Image (cartoon, rainbow over all chains, first blue to last red; front, side, top):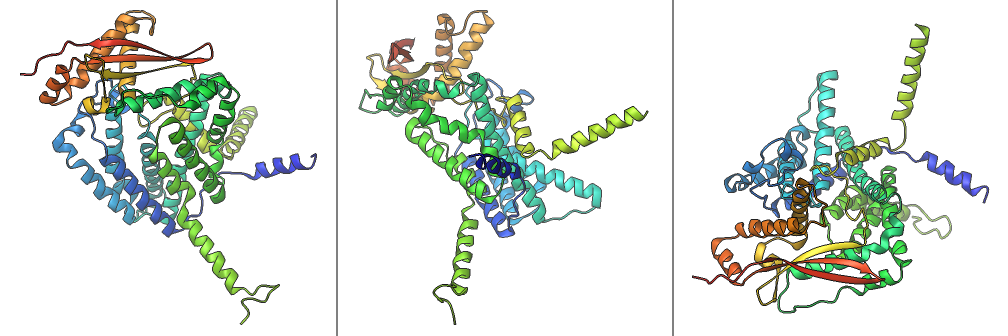
Length: 319
Length: 165
């Protein structure tokens, strides 16, 4: 036992965040998937034509012009052209400018109706992170070396993807901190109270799309959580721990993949239990953290090299 | 002079150490998000942060008490409508210097304001159809009492049926 603790401590001390050395083809797939996600999320919403209770950017300016039917008819197209250029690798400070600010303005209008919805923030943060990181890098290079590239250099893309991952991870960490602050650190012990939220989300969804069936029982799990108060901390506690330690996802590819997969699993469980779906968050984790294409190629390369290399024990592979 | 340059040297050393702290970028952005709070595109993501043993939701019925889907009437979910009602309710109560939640007058006012706002967003024919049913809005409080989940309902909007022309 005495030897294990220092070993764990020494291992933890080696953990650091660093921009992953993504290959160009990996980042091309990431950019394409991210662009599709942004466009899908943008076009599935119609921004409200008022900002009754302004929030964020709407506190500083009137954004309702964006929601005018004639403007919103072309705004996603402008964003689409920018995203297409972004996928092609055209300088992100230019190509991402319109998509980023159209998305931010649209999300601001959606959240300026008196109800804060949380499905747009993470995409907006990721867009802002990519755009800001690439803009700062480009300006710094322009000032220092007097150089400007029409196409994004690989090093810029790596930095920008790193900041996207940072912003997503920070979102989860801050969510855990919010929980701890609101409950003075006792969130896990207060999880039996989630039973009322469970009832609320189920009954709200039921009443949203009610047809002929007029009554519904609330989920049996809610009653069970109230009666057996020790179950909720076991069920929901791991979620808080995952969020709190999400920064470890920046320690390398394997860490990112593990946290990404567990994060997606967490969202799927929330969808199952609470009836709350966050496909945008799951997609972001899949694109930037799990990064399936890399693992598929890595596995394929590993299998091929193993086949080519003669096995020292069986001799399989010897010509 | 020497003392001053020593301080500068120390500050520079500490600065370098701070920058080298692992995961500093994530913690810095997390802190920024926490400070900014709910100002889009920033958020401290406080979903289910304050776990109190109570919650609430709304639903709609006609004058006979038959439930009607919130989406079918308003094209919006009850969760978002409840949040909007709560924001208006809180603002009304605070403007009057009253305690939010105990101020029923402000709650009724906020509920009627919410109903009228969302009704106004519908096409005229749909508005007439909704008003013809004698719409009611029911506010439901979910509580835990004596180890059991209890639902308390209250009609907060009640309109008489208006004949369709």
